[in-house]
Image (cartoon, rainbow, N blue to C red):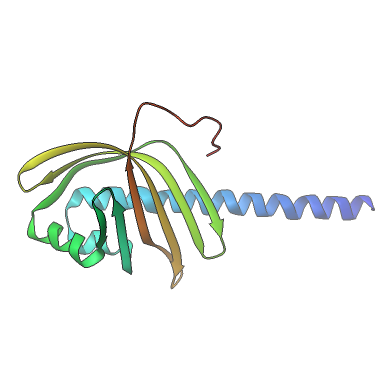
Length: 151
Protein backbone atom coordinates (compact mmCIF):
# COMPACT_ATOMS: atom_id res chain seq x y z
CA UNK A 1 0.00 0.00 0.00
CA UNK A 2 1.41 3.32 -0.96
CA UNK A 3 1.72 6.20 1.48
CA UNK A 4 -0.89 8.12 -0.53
CA UNK A 5 -3.34 5.20 -0.37
CA UNK A 6 -2.78 4.80 3.37
CA UNK A 7 -3.25 8.52 3.96
CA UNK A 8 -6.37 8.57 1.78
CA UNK A 9 -7.80 5.61 3.69
CA UNK A 10 -7.02 7.27 7.03
CA UNK A 11 -8.61 10.56 5.93
CA UNK A 12 -11.76 8.74 4.77
CA UNK A 13 -12.14 7.04 8.16
CA UNK A 14 -11.42 10.33 9.93
CA UNK A 15 -14.10 12.15 7.89
CA UNK A 16 -16.67 9.47 8.81
CA UNK A 17 -15.73 9.83 12.49
CA UNK A 18 -15.97 13.62 12.26
CA UNK A 19 -19.33 13.34 10.51
CA UNK A 20 -20.54 10.90 13.16
CA UNK A 21 -19.44 13.35 15.87
CA UNK A 22 -21.23 16.16 14.05
CA UNK A 23 -24.38 14.05 13.61
CA UNK A 24 -24.26 13.01 17.28
CA UNK A 25 -23.93 16.63 18.39
CA UNK A 26 -26.83 17.63 16.12
CA UNK A 27 -29.08 14.87 17.48
CA UNK A 28 -28.15 15.70 21.09
CA UNK A 29 -29.11 19.32 20.35
CA UNK A 30 -32.48 18.16 18.97
CA UNK A 31 -33.12 16.05 22.09
CA UNK A 32 -32.14 18.95 24.37
CA UNK A 33 -34.47 21.29 22.43
CA UNK A 34 -37.25 18.72 22.86
CA UNK A 35 -36.65 18.79 26.63
CA UNK A 36 -37.04 22.58 26.58
CA UNK A 37 -40.23 22.22 24.53
CA UNK A 38 -41.58 19.73 27.09
CA UNK A 39 -41.25 22.40 29.79
CA UNK A 40 -43.07 24.92 27.60
CA UNK A 41 -46.15 22.70 27.98
CA UNK A 42 -47.09 23.67 24.42
CA UNK A 43 -48.55 20.55 22.81
CA UNK A 44 -47.92 21.76 19.26
CA UNK A 45 -44.28 22.63 19.99
CA UNK A 46 -43.69 19.28 21.74
CA UNK A 47 -45.42 17.39 18.94
CA UNK A 48 -43.14 18.96 16.34
CA UNK A 49 -40.32 16.72 17.63
CA UNK A 50 -42.45 13.57 17.26
CA UNK A 51 -43.34 11.50 14.23
CA UNK A 52 -47.08 11.06 13.67
CA UNK A 53 -46.79 7.40 14.71
CA UNK A 54 -44.77 8.14 17.89
CA UNK A 55 -45.47 6.06 20.98
CA UNK A 56 -44.06 6.03 24.49
CA UNK A 57 -43.49 2.81 26.41
CA UNK A 58 -43.40 2.92 30.20
CA UNK A 59 -44.19 0.71 33.17
CA UNK A 60 -47.89 1.45 32.57
CA UNK A 61 -47.90 0.38 28.92
CA UNK A 62 -47.91 2.04 25.50
CA UNK A 63 -49.38 5.48 24.82
CA UNK A 64 -49.81 7.26 21.49
CA UNK A 65 -48.77 10.74 20.43
CA UNK A 66 -52.41 11.87 20.29
CA UNK A 67 -53.14 10.65 23.81
CA UNK A 68 -49.94 12.12 25.29
CA UNK A 69 -50.37 15.52 23.59
CA UNK A 70 -54.06 15.52 24.53
CA UNK A 71 -53.07 15.41 28.22
CA UNK A 72 -50.58 18.25 27.63
CA UNK A 73 -53.08 20.38 25.68
CA UNK A 74 -55.71 19.96 28.40
CA UNK A 75 -53.25 21.08 31.09
CA UNK A 76 -53.68 17.80 32.95
CA UNK A 77 -50.00 16.95 32.29
CA UNK A 78 -47.30 19.59 32.61
CA UNK A 79 -43.54 19.55 33.12
CA UNK A 80 -41.56 22.17 35.03
CA UNK A 81 -38.17 20.46 34.64
CA UNK A 82 -36.66 18.05 32.11
CA UNK A 83 -32.89 17.67 32.35
CA UNK A 84 -30.39 15.29 30.77
CA UNK A 85 -27.99 13.90 33.38
CA UNK A 86 -24.51 13.20 32.05
CA UNK A 87 -23.69 12.25 28.52
CA UNK A 88 -25.90 10.58 25.94
CA UNK A 89 -25.17 7.42 23.96
CA UNK A 90 -25.98 7.93 20.29
CA UNK A 91 -25.82 5.25 17.59
CA UNK A 92 -26.75 5.69 13.93
CA UNK A 93 -28.14 3.11 11.53
CA UNK A 94 -28.66 5.04 8.32
CA UNK A 95 -31.70 7.26 8.82
CA UNK A 96 -32.42 5.75 12.25
CA UNK A 97 -30.71 6.77 15.48
CA UNK A 98 -30.84 5.36 18.99
CA UNK A 99 -30.48 7.96 21.74
CA UNK A 100 -30.02 6.71 25.31
CA UNK A 101 -29.55 8.92 28.35
CA UNK A 102 -30.62 9.54 31.90
CA UNK A 103 -33.27 12.22 32.49
CA UNK A 104 -34.56 13.84 35.65
CA UNK A 105 -37.89 15.59 35.38
CA UNK A 106 -40.67 17.13 37.37
CA UNK A 107 -44.15 16.46 36.05
CA UNK A 108 -47.52 17.58 37.30
CA UNK A 109 -50.36 15.19 36.58
CA UNK A 110 -53.88 15.99 37.65
CA UNK A 111 -52.58 18.47 40.23
CA UNK A 112 -49.94 16.19 41.79
CA UNK A 113 -46.19 16.68 41.45
CA UNK A 114 -44.03 13.74 40.38
CA UNK A 115 -40.24 13.89 40.44
CA UNK A 116 -38.70 11.22 38.23
CA UNK A 117 -35.21 9.91 37.53
CA UNK A 118 -35.37 7.75 34.40
CA UNK A 119 -33.25 6.06 31.78
CA UNK A 120 -34.69 6.86 28.39
CA UNK A 121 -34.15 5.42 24.96
CA UNK A 122 -35.54 7.37 22.04
CA UNK A 123 -35.61 6.03 18.50
CA UNK A 124 -35.30 8.84 15.98
CA UNK A 125 -35.95 8.65 12.25
CA UNK A 126 -34.67 11.18 9.76
CA UNK A 127 -37.76 12.28 7.88
CA UNK A 128 -37.92 15.17 5.41
CA UNK A 129 -34.36 16.10 6.34
CA UNK A 130 -34.88 16.34 10.10
CA UNK A 131 -34.84 14.05 13.07
CA UNK A 132 -38.19 13.14 14.63
CA UNK A 133 -38.74 10.70 17.46
CA UNK A 134 -40.74 7.60 16.56
CA UNK A 135 -40.54 5.79 19.91
CA UNK A 136 -39.62 6.66 23.48
CA UNK A 137 -39.00 4.11 26.21
CA UNK A 138 -38.60 5.13 29.84
CA UNK A 139 -37.34 3.04 32.75
CA UNK A 140 -37.04 4.25 36.34
CA UNK A 141 -33.38 4.68 37.35
CA UNK A 142 -32.02 2.86 40.38
CA UNK A 143 -28.77 3.29 42.28
CA UNK A 144 -26.96 0.42 40.56
CA UNK A 145 -24.97 1.42 37.48
CA UNK A 146 -23.96 -0.52 34.42
CA UNK A 147 -20.23 -0.01 34.00
CA UNK A 148 -18.25 0.19 30.81
CA UNK A 149 -21.01 1.52 28.58
CA UNK A 150 -19.45 3.92 26.14
CA UNK A 151 -21.32 7.14 25.41
